[in-house]
Length: 394
Image 1 (cartoon, rainbow, N blue to C red):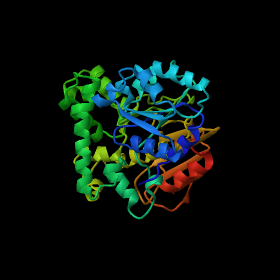
Image 2 (cartoon, rainbow, N blue to C red; image 1 turned 90 degrees about the vertical axis):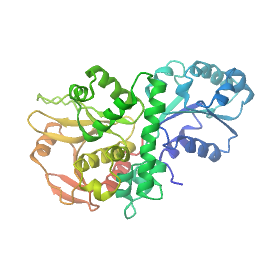
Image 3 (tube, rainbow, N blue to C red; image 1 turned 120 degrees about the horizontal axis):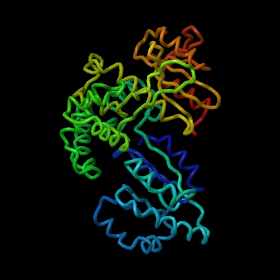
Image 4 (cartoon, one colour; image 1 turned 120 degrees about the vertical axis):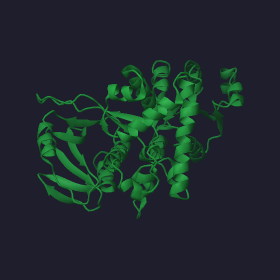
């Protein structure tokens, strides 16, 4: 059992919010986390999986069911399957408030983001807190010998990371991808061919961390550019893909405005490319961009909610892999899988453009040392600790 960092944030929210939504892709550990919270607070709880016909049948008269279980913590899993519950929850919560129920009454779990957020801002405004549960990060699994490489290779889905071998882990990830293609995506969009979506997903793995070119993808897949964009948007809504937006700085320079697209879990990237062992990964052309995406996801998993971030690139070649703005600070970050970090001219020009207050080179080693030009070379685990020390988890 690996302790999740989000547990402590939810622990703070539970006494004050009548409803909490935990968002994250399937198999990331939402249900386990919700049940752990219920046990921690010694709540009587009721769990309903809204993909189960028998559990959905219990909500034929939802208000009566909620009244019958008043005083219990009700866990509603895969809520996007029954979004019409949101307006009803508002009335139930308000009636319970009048009776003195002040702490959390509903834990709402969902494996898609925008479907949930579109349904609830007006109906549950002021009554619900949203938190995302990502895959394991390095702080959660610990920085023991080999854990970083294992997390990078296998990714952070619990069943994949904790598998008994790399082979079993790879098999789990391949099955996970197939399940999404054959079951989950068709539930959202019935007319998306599984073979086209697999082709797109595999192309994204090959192009990990590159500027997205919808026309190029469309030509390869025999799809229109708008269709490719809609498919990528769908994978992003399912919290499987991240479009990293460019950092817009008022520097009067010609900036690249196209987003970079990453498959969020490195293990899925490797499974799509048939990479099952560390030796195969280190010799593969995707290794550098896979490491970059892995580091970025680890960093974003510990950032405060209201921190702003993006990448920076100009047509003249100034470039930063990640820029973070928070509390009047601007952190400029270079990411490379190397044991011999060196600053490029593009980095030095970019930090001047964005007026960075802090400069870091996140590399594959562990020691922290000055690199020149007010830049610090730092390992990933130390960098995550630095974020928590400076800013905490917002």
